[in-house]
View: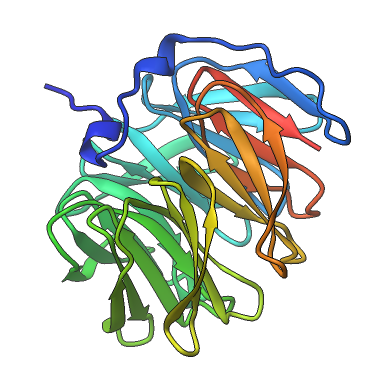
Length: 314
């Protein structure tokens, strides 16, 4: 029987997938354009060319979104339970984690098709490209981190980081360090040259997304229990805990000045000033906001809302 992604990751059930919303009331200073997509939008990635992919777990497909319109320009099938998606730097290919198939799908972005799959030893959750884009790092629902050759799909190694799902990943700007969070409450640092564990810490709570701040000196961790934890990567100490109820997904602005945080349980986005550590704005989006991404120019955010819409925020 197919299990929900949410239950695998110890999150809330996907009960909102059948709902639709039209958008929140007007919010001063923010232009928010929603359009219906349906089928449980979950994750979003934007290429350097400005193409947006939105994963739809309920229909095993990816929607291609024109951000300017906004509208869906194409939709294509991938594997069973697409969770995460990541573009190559050139934007000619993308990789999708097919959770229930235990595969990573390779997408030709010119033909908008999944052209092959790479098997992995567990349910594939998150994916990032390593230095030089020669390796794929794939987190698994069984606590493993699998390293694949990005061309052949050969498994180079699998690092066991526990027994529960690894659901947050973040790279430093030079991709020399990878940070991985576990729903069990730990965060681990990986040296991407040697693919060995450098260090780890116990964050506690229910970790979700991760992002490394500008300058590679700060790590932000979304804790669904109600916090954004801030860690100093030089001293490896926790320096702040910012109250953000139901924190789930992250997007850092291009200048590193603000961190946008989706609040799944309460239907809004919190905007954090990265210097002061204060929440300076909240943007109501209704529904169940999951993951979001910023356009390359930093002017627009694209939000996958599990309630059946994609929302463009300018």
